[in-house]
Image 1 (cartoon, rainbow, N blue to C red):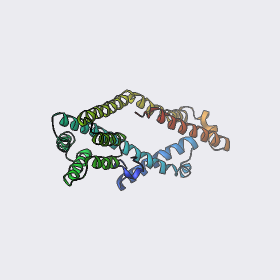
Image 2 (cartoon, rainbow, N blue to C red):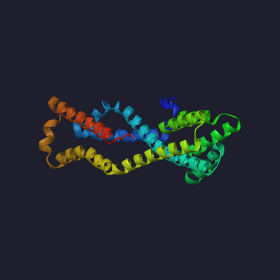
Image 3 (cartoon, rainbow, N blue to C red):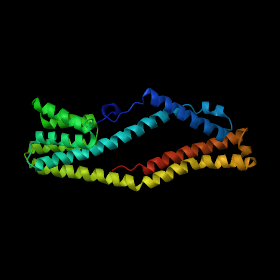
Image 4 (cartoon, rainbow, N blue to C red):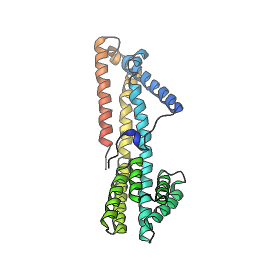
Length: 252
């Protein structure tokens, strides 16, 4: 089973009209500042307008990543709750009911995984297989660990092995993986702050030169060679930002 397609996961995010207007205003301000600093004219921002499309995609991706982090935490706690309930002697179906109560207590009744587990119990009550319901959950959520858990659960159910032990170990492995991911995020949070500072440094340098020593930067404006050099610098800056984002984007 493979989860594919951005539209198939609950992480897909489309900016609302209000968010779209705010993003447009924010992007316009950034383009205007960049245009004035690099080309000494606000009209150069018109040439940069195609960047707005990528800016919107970036905003949507940030929202999706934030939602994904929250759902991953819910999934880890949900799987641990299911494992604990199974160890306590609950049946598989009742274990998911116990997990719903725990998730609702931790994240509220609107928790994504709580609603997903409710759907599983509903399908099981209608005599659907638990493994089929889990696979549908994995496809809906779009989490790699959910797909892995669904596959392990189906295998354990078919093979007739120790279901409680297999699920317990699988849930523990998933929990450890998500914990490691959280620790990595904490470790690189300082580097992310440094990256943000470095991102604004080129603009700060240009502002300083324009205010304190304009004669040094004046030859970069109003002529073809200056526009060419500033364009190369701007492209180099954008490339450095893309590279730095890839460096700190550590996958577990």
